[in-house]
Amino acid sequence: MKKKFLAVALFVILFVTLFLLQFDFGQEVRPQEQTKTPQLEKSPEKIVPSPQNIKQATAIYVFVAWMWLAIIILIYFLRLKIKEVDRLHRLGYFSGEKK
Amino acid sequence: MGVQSWLEERSGVSAIINFLKKKTVPQHKHSIWYYTGSSILLFFAIQVITGFVLAFYYRPTLEEANKSVARIMTEVPLGWIIRSIHSWSASFMIALVFIHLIAIWLIKSYRQQRELTWMSGVFLLVVSLAFGFTGYLLPWDDLSLSATKVGTDIPRSIPVIGVWITKLLRGGEDVTADTLTRFFSFHVSILPVFIFLLLAVHVYLIQKQGMSLPLAFESKKEKVEELPFWPNFVYREMIVWLLLLGVLVSLAIFFPPSLEKKADLMAPAPEGIKPEWYFLFLFQTLKIFPAKILFINGDTLAVLLIVLVGILFFFLPLIDNKPAGKKGKILTIIACVFIAYAVAMTVWSLLE
Image 1 (cartoon, each protein chain N blue to C red):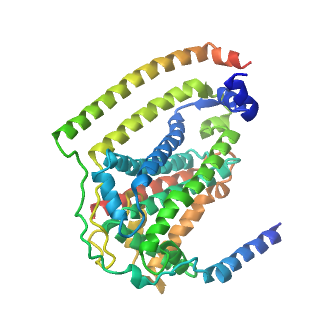
Image 2 (cartoon, rainbow over the protein chains, first blue to last red):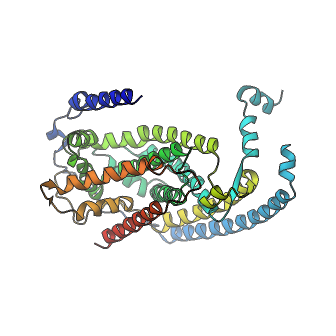
């Protein structure tokens, strides 16, 4: 078992060092000069995303407020559901169903 | 014949439903860590969905990459929010993978019969980091180009195979348009295949071995209270998901990532290049190593040390192969030292 493992390990090491390292896997197919051409075209400066106007800003704040309100309400209902299913679990309702 | 029975005859889906109905989750003071696994899946799903949307508009070419991201942020309706959610959810996912692994390390859940679960988890961390690394270049701005140059240059210090790895990552000697297409290909096709396979294996192994218990319960064979997975545990998970979703959307809206100007391959590297936060502790480790230690190159020694620590981390279940209930104080201390080191290095790098 140990010999087999050593043979496989040796094969993998030899395969990587002697065979795979010779391959470039399609690297440098394109001459470097071609991709290193100076980019003359002007590009826009740093873009910091933010609402464009007061209407968009208000819409975003209203959305965030509604989202948190919805989350709080959903959590409230989920807590009620948890209390109920825990009570059913203590009564053995789910284990009874499994039998 | 009803749709349900038609589906059942062909897929046998009821076996999975029955399994989920019978599945239970232990309840104890460390149960909070069980929620990190499902939260990782939640953020992964968000990554996939927002990634699809971004891929509709993104163009992985030297001329178009930066322009297409600028278009997503300025012209596409809600494009900047989608990009921001994609970016923030990547950070959340990686942070949770780190927390999940460290929690498992501390409560020693990797022992006996869960070795493969741990190893697939470490692979998932590596793939998640690879997602972050490849995704960082895609906007093709000044910072991403410089950070990728630094990042892909690091393996060069490894003897024998280092140069080959750097060339394989870059698609040549330097970071060029070929690197961009290569990283895009990794990001949207190769890494997703790996992560789906690893997730499938990881989730299967967790179901096969069952949820792990803390040391105290494993050793004393105490009876632990168990909750049914459906619906008791799923409802609890839903609360965590809702809160995480709220935080994610709020952060994405109020702190969206900016886009620097288009990268210029001929321009010198800008000041203060830093990788994403999850690579900062490694980046700072490489920085603090002196140029030469005795007669060995400092960079080579640092990279080899990091690789060695990574290998030890991967084989942790084989190193610490005590029975499940036994304590492992030394490994707990090592874990705490590692956390303190990673946090200290990250803070140091941020303050610099």
